[in-house]
Length: 53
Image 1 (cartoon, rainbow, N blue to C red):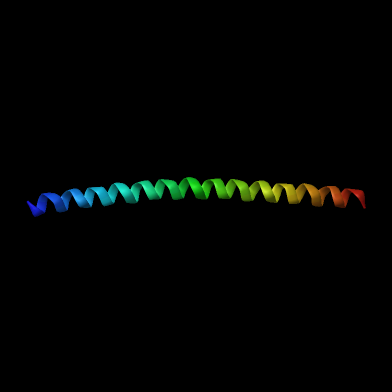
Image 2: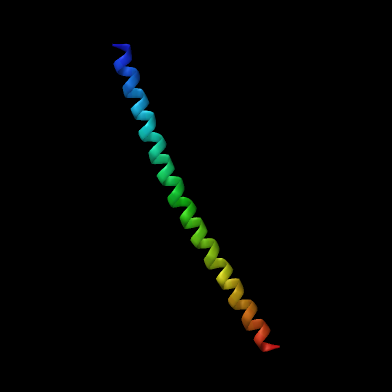
């Protein structure tokens, strides 16, 4: 009986780890996209500033 429950617990932990991994990957992608967008804004301001001088 204990073995059956232990196997179920391992599967539950595996599913939890998979879910957390997916959430982290999506979060990192969103952060990366935001970071790239911020750098593009900085680049645009820098280009405009350099063009005026």
